[in-house]
Length: 190
Image (cartoon, rainbow, N blue to C red; front, top):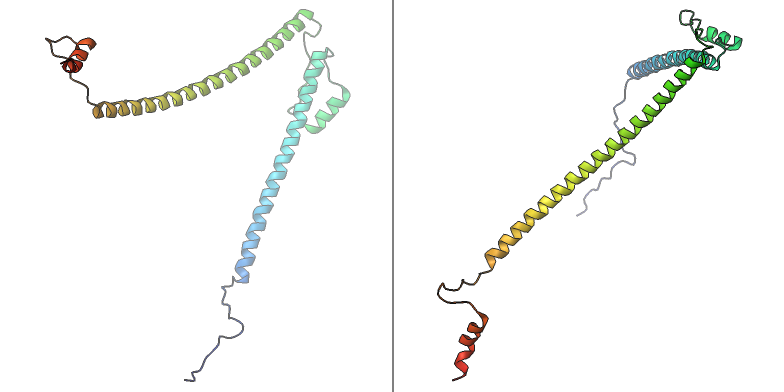
């Protein structure tokens, strides 16, 4: 009757697999190398973007100077463009027909026509998108109506099969409501 009861030890034994320190160090070194390469690539992209931005700003200054009628860049713009962009990309620019008002007016008309064309293209694109959305909606509605119509035809067929139609009157007899009434109520007079 007195059996021996054994209890488990107070602290359980944990047998977790441990990664070797060499493997862990190698993994960390690979991760650091990858992060360093990514950081270097991002720095290079940032430098390229800054150079490109400087070239764009210089070109925009040239365009603005050409529209204003001065025909040359200011000294500060030239110096900043020369410092930011490589020497092969800087080309001295001078508008050859700066003083011609007819040419200037024609360019203004061209720019205005281009702006109008872009606005019309935007409206056309929006209209095409709206029409396509309407067509999709109509197709969905048409499909839903086809399904409802098929269900209605099926129900009508079931109703028609369930109801028995009265036989048509014989060819020799005429079908008149009064004659029917006479035949039904005629026997009461007697």
